Length: 318
Ligand code: TUI
Image (cartoon, rainbow, N blue to C red; front, side, top):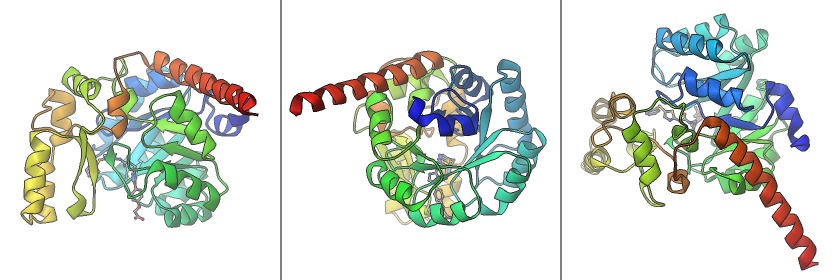
């Protein structure tokens, strides 16, 4: 991984693998386990108030001395208090999702916190580079949760060409083949969410993990397009009802009310029938629960194996 040391140096990590800061799912335990394994663990703040996030940051600080990050979900009603907390706690890395973090960038930078927004289009990437972000996560629509319009395959090279900060690829990456593909597209690192849902240290309800493990290639759907906030989830009774409401012309407010609390119900109570089981299309590739350290080791071994195979085949072709 010597080629990819600049991103690792920037973040103080050993391997260029980030764990997505998934709302409710990415707790202090999971983030600490990924950081201990040499990657960057990231706590998800989602829609939670700062007091909930504070407990997770404390937990992560008890479990690891290595750097970890916090994801700030910019649609959250608590975003300002979460930003204050992250500054107070001197979190080393902040990722953002579901919006433009521009107005917060200067505050983070003044404290030496690295700022890494998720982007799903070139225009925002260019704007944020001008505002001084340290790197960017280009997330394609194969990913779970809130998504943009473009696939990873076309988004990553266009972002890489548009900016000069390091780009981290996300969306649809679950093994060494995906890591090599991302590096080939010009990314300097990868972020995985769905595979880490099935990490042993991930505290989601076992029903949630089992649903990801059992999922096949076509088991995710995208709901919420009519609200302007499309979300990829595993299909269930909730998604069928949501689709019926969207087709019937329900307003964004009605849909928002109907969807409220559904992710927490799936994550905490294991309600995978009426709850929102957010996961990416890579769910079909995930076969078992493993420790975070086994996942990171498998990603690195897979990456090196695929690079070796490509090299060997190229020599034979010639
Ligand atoms: O943020 C995510 N994934 C998420 S957030 C979340 S919680 C939620 N629940 C219901 C509705 C909405 C959110 C669950 N999963 N991923 C990162 C991500 N960010 N993907 C796409 C974007 C994005 C989209 C638009 C980033 C910036 C953006 O810019 C809009 C603008 O203002 O220019």
